[in-house]
Length: 240
Image (cartoon, rainbow, N blue to C red; front, side, top):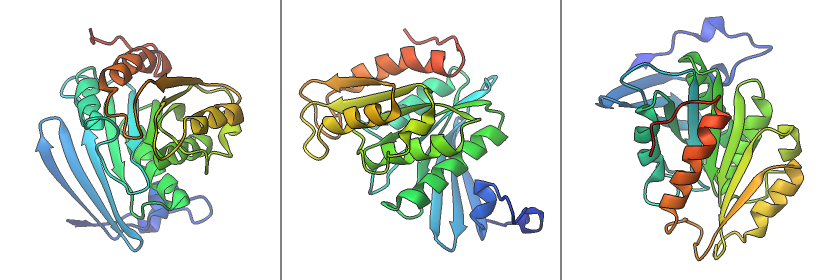
């Protein structure tokens, strides 16, 4: 564990998201050849990130993802964030999975996701897509709005509409919304409302699926294999 040494470099009038954390200490461990586990201790709680790093040459693009109102790092479906992290790291795209300091606090959670975007940017990403499940959809949209120079697109999974009132400020950036037609917690209309607020975007309805999107792993993966390369700058994907 290392004590933070950057406090004297913070511009108090315009701190970055990472500076505004006022971290007490940071710990990091290498889990596999392509994944790191980082923990940042703050007075408001513990910020945790799983970081998928390409073993070969990295491209200047990244994905930063978050969970729902209870937090979590696995995402929708059957641990799709883990699968996608490995999948896209193989093509040179970093993926950071953010676990909130204080779940269900939309402003604080958006701050946490913004920290993930800044880590990705500091590592060389010029274009970032943010994604979030359920409550995390609002977190992703709010983060994208305040980080317009870096975040080039947003993906939501079974998003709520509360907290997405600012979606119009996406200003036409790509927005992809997935929703199960049988969502037992948030009705499909939630994603339709968010698209209406944004003024653009694509809603993909998933027949017979519920809030966790547990029946749609293949559909989600295939659609993102098409959407992400174009949104992140015309990447050449090896997915087949």
